[in-house]
Amino acid sequence: MNEIQGLNKASKMVFEDNKKKGFWDKERETGTLLMLIVSEVAETLEADRKDRFTNVPENVVWKEDWDIGEKSSDVTNFETYVKDTFEDEIADTFIRLMDLCGARGIDIEWHIKQKLAYNRTRAKKHGKNY
Image (cartoon, rainbow, N blue to C red):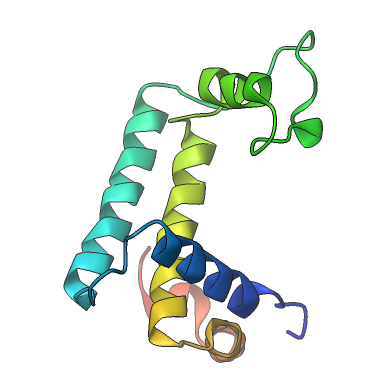
């Protein structure tokens, strides 16, 4: 699985961005970081339960053209059509995971690669019913 690339770089970028925003003014406990990840997963569940999914109408400039950092109309579009949706909360979960990896210097690309290779050696459903 050599296709897994860029996660280490992304993790470092997320961690550095979060440091700039003051989230790392003091060292954070691993338990706190893990619970922040769990809270994002819970928010994803709530978005699903409320049927909140990203849905950009055709009359709105397509999201690939948005420049969130530059144009206030794009920020408004994000807040209107994306914020607090299932996809947005999934993104928050990844961001929290990458922040933890960046902070702890975890080579997540290597670990994912190794885990996927190991899982291929395991029995169907890893020997469980579900």
